[in-house]
Length: 133
Image 1 (tube, rainbow, N blue to C red):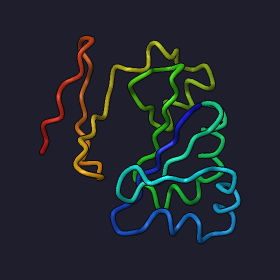
Image 2: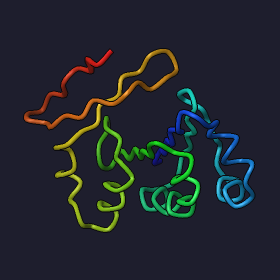
Image 3: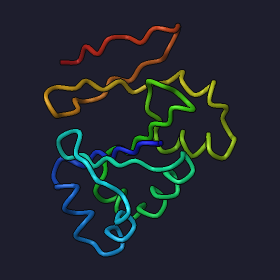
Image 4: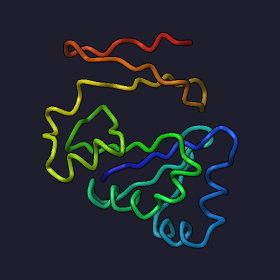
């Protein structure tokens, strides 16, 4: 399974915005929507390709209501999430999955909220600890 997590903009309620609009509601109708973090919507898809296709279908809404779209696919990494652009490049064979992890956005998590990201460049196998909060 491939997981998708959409993190909403601060001034809107993401789940409401998505399910209150007919086109988005229909695109999401077959998915079990969850809220793993405050103002985030998560779901499981069958593959990386179908996750990217879903985000493409929801693009109008993503531009208006989403800060970050993340995709997790265990065939690429068993620990790290992909940005939408990186997932699309891997799906299209533009980037090899093994070469996808040099530049990172590391999030802190407090209670049920994602904290502001820390941008880092991987220089070895270890990830730096989140230290912005």
